[in-house]
Length: 113
Image (cartoon, rainbow, N blue to C red; front, side):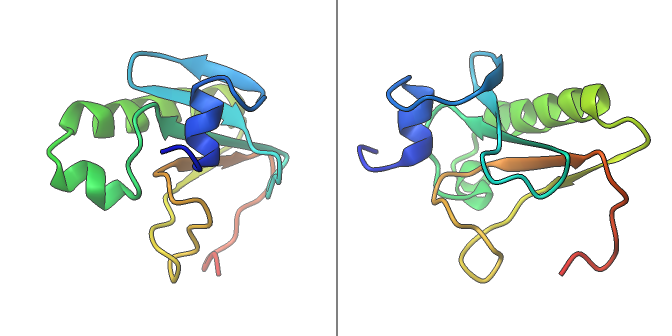
């Protein structure tokens, strides 16, 4: 999608601190971190939400998102980490491109908000 910031990052049109890339996903450092370590893992192909990935039966992409998020969380997580998927406006999703947040480096609290 031509106006999607994450699609532009994937294409290299917008700079980002990329820390991981495979055939299905990339991971970047969040520019608005909510924890000392805050990464975003996003599919290289545009999907608006995680539900769209699942409904389109893109099981490999869904698996790649979770594998990459878990791998990176373990690397940066120290004593623990949180993996979050916001979906839709009421779910707190602010960019209409599916992505997974990896948060670490501080004590997490429940409920998250």
